[in-house]
Image 1 (tube, protein in one colour):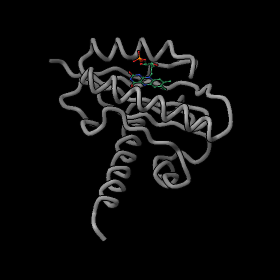
Image 2 (cartoon, rainbow, N blue to C red; image 1 turned 90 degrees about the vertical axis):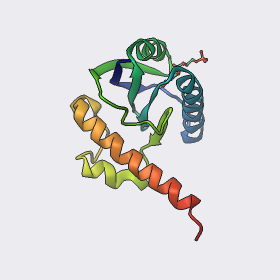
Image 3 (tube, rainbow, N blue to C red; image 1 turned 45 degrees about the vertical axis):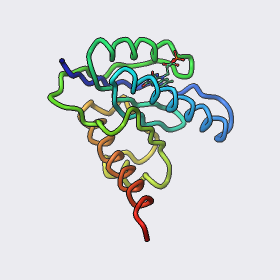
Length: 151
Ligand SMILES: Cc1cc2nc3c(=O)[nH]c(=O)nc-3n(C[C@H](O)[C@H](O)[C@H](O)COP(=O)(O)O)c2cc1C
């Protein structure tokens, strides 16, 4: 067992209006969750209209196979691998693939990480992407817990 984490970013090539884009993104997340549960992969996918930033964690062989499949996907282009590193434990164990879209609702979290305007992942280092993704996960999980809590 050697757990690894891979971080990449890519350019979102999804065309169409907001609704069509959201539909495509839901498809990506649904397929990812099904495949990743099967492959023991967990992680997070952050996206806006221009970019995807994804963190994959699990066994190195499985991550590589998944990354190679993802890299061939025409729904995005110019993929840049940011980092691959060994990790002692998973940081996204709760998510087979948690998708967080950049909406005004989470803008404050992006601002806290110094991202005000267009997401420019080329300026984000692995550690900064990870910190942002962990904050977004905490937010999404709290939101889910609040919905589940009786009033
Ligand atoms: C931005 C992005 C992220 C993706 N992430 C994953 C992922 O985490 N796991 C996965 O299996 N497929 C992911 N996909 C989808 C793959 O590219 C591919 O369509 C899918 O794995 C094929 O699965 P299938 O052979 O079961 O149809 C992603 C695609 C995009 C565009």
